[in-house]
Amino acid sequence: MTASGKDKSDLDVIIIGAGVGGLYAIYRLRKLGLRIRAYEAGDGVGGTWFWNRYPGCRCDVESMEYSYSFDNDLQQEWEWPERYGTQPEILRYVEHVAERFDLLRDVQLKTRIKKARFDHGTNLWTITTEKGETVSAPYCIMATGNLSTPKLPEIAGIDDFQGEKYHTGLWPKEGVDFTGKVVGAVGTGSSGVQSIPLIAKQAKHLYVFQRTANFSLPARNAPLDPEKERKHKAEYVERRKAAYGTPFGIAGYPSPEKFAAEADAEERRLSYEAKWAEGGSISFLFAYKDLLTDKAANDTAADFVREKIRATVKDPKTAELLCPNDHPIGTKRLILDTDYYETYNRDNVTLVDIRTNPIELFTKGGLQLTDGGTYDLEAISFATGFDAMTGAMREIDIQTGKDNCIRDKWEDGPRSYLGIMVAGFPNMFMVTGPQSPGVKSQMILSCEWHVDFAANAIMHMRGKGLTRIGPDVKAEDDWVTHNNEVADSTLYPLANSWYMGANVPGKPRIFMPYVGGVEAYTNKCNDVVDNDYEGFRLE
Ligand code: NAP
Image (tube, rainbow, N blue to C red; front, side, top):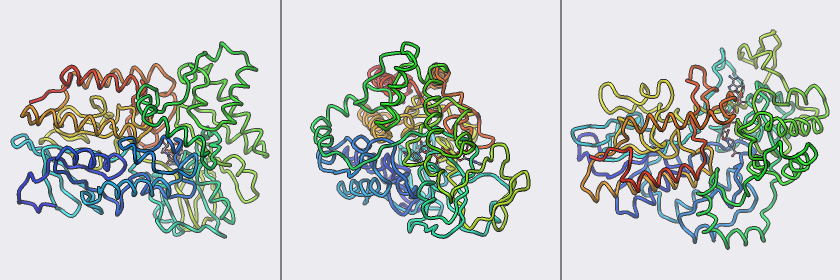
């Protein structure tokens, strides 16, 4: 790190974050001969997989897919033990990649960035760390993650609670032993649904405080079938290429051929049954063409899952509470679980409905509901999610002039061109930024795509002797409009999801990810580049 006042441009590119995207940026940009450094808040690399160490944490994309594609030896040699990777396994993989490609020498750990300033005179970004150190470079890459700003509920007394308190996104490295304890679990999204069955196995009693029931499908996790692995590896290179031509950036799932109404009820049931038995969410959502665009079609799939919940959970009242009824299936991230619904058949688990009877306040020894009912708790696991997609960048004070900061610009929701750059913020690239398919795709593939885009743009600029690149306001406006139109042509906006910013009080309700699919998106990016960076201003 250059001390303030010294040579201000000793780097070519500053990278903020050393998760999956930031690490690939180091690899890619270093290979181009650029001087780079990544700054990472954690004391280790891996981003999401470094922080989310809660019990049961596992990726919902199959392990043969959820990995880097940039090095064929890496993808051939790495062996995944299970169909879906666990957090420790994925972290071990990311750490292996960092070591294998000697990436750590360009990472400064335990360094949170507080400020980023662009100087229009010098065309330099200067970033400032929490400790007041500064460093400057012409380009800055925000690899800050989409789900990296954990959020605790804004409920009175939360700091008064004297028992153990954990957030799934900030889980202690040494793990937590709930044995013999009365535990509360707040939040029933992916993190809650994955952790609840394991916490229940340890706790003396587990109270699950549920505000909204979510749809969850069985993951059907198992040891990786060696034959499947062999076949997959033989086709790895082709599969990775093919992935860019799919909606979610994952090859191998045949596109649906029929609309739901083209099948009769029995045919649909058999089709959903087969998908349920197979496990996984993409296959299920690919049962029919219109599951995410037509409510009546969607209802057929949602009803099927509700019936499964009723058939699994023995207590009918609990089963009914667990049946999601406020959003179409798939419009919130579809969860994959192992024994989630079965967990409610245990004697030591109680589901508490905080939709009709919300948590009023936390107390020294537990919590109190609005009707006055109290729960004594020794520990609470908060799986209450994140200030998603915009939170991490808004936490950094990013400015390019007195009246131009990202917090203000995104006051009414994010605005970007392709989720890659923001008008008025030149030379700042985002990795899987809002209005890109990032979170609606195989994330590692999208990270590689965005870093490659930035790397190519930077080299293009250098080759032409240009120093400043950023989107035109009109191109950005058009992309935002397109993003919203595509979202509005689907059922996604019907859910109060983190895609909509709905989980953060006061956050504007704007649908943030691009849901036109990876294929349409990457085609658009390629067209932009082929047309001389159409929509960008290069100076
Ligand atoms: P989430 O999906 O946002 O779920 C948060 C949960 O906390 C929801 O049930 C929410 O209820 C509840 N909650 C939030 N604030 C609350 C409050 N004030 N009072 C009561 N309940 C409250 O967060 P997440 O489970 O951490 O998952 C976030 C995303 O991370 C996932 O959608 C997924 O993309 C990713 N993820 C993936 C995996 C995987 O790959 N398997 C695992 C974990 C996470 P409401 O629904 O009513 O807001």
